Length: 113
Length: 115
Image 1 (spheres, rainbow over the protein chains, first blue to last red):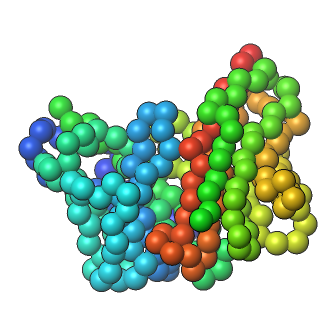
Image 2: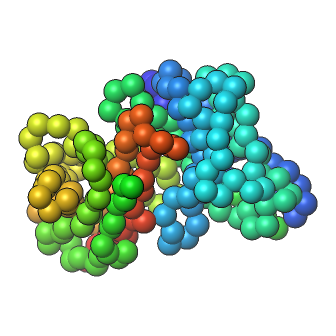
């Protein structure tokens, strides 16, 4: 079945450590996105990529980094520069060629101890 | 510029009662509109979408929405809710080929079903 896989589902980190969240899709979509979600808030865009080897900052990119070396993969690194990294992170890909529909992963919950 | 407004951050409803979650948009171009649902600690999944054609759109889990161009609305409805409908609902406005990421999310409406 086609879809998006995020891992890990839960992650704990000590302050000062970098962590990388994985996002893989087998939907053959060019566009991929990372969102951050905090309790009671909507989704805020961190980074997005519309094609391999290219990506753009979203609204809250500070303290995060991404890469897009393969069409299927769009990992997100939460660096030690991110002041408040505890949140729920969602990865999505988009069918831009047809309906523009977004397909989401199950999310990764990061907790900084 | 395009925007999406979800008018209620929280909607409490008794089980088996009808519900309407409101969404208004503003745009000067052709419109697609989506509703997504998010259950606790999960990703978002598509409930329904309006692309063109009939303005009444039926989705999964008994939900439906009506696209109203004159009122710039896309309200989500269900005639009888169940406890399992407790979730966060997002109205999303994609603009294929649009600038930046071409996506506008509403802030979400938390549907609370009371027994």
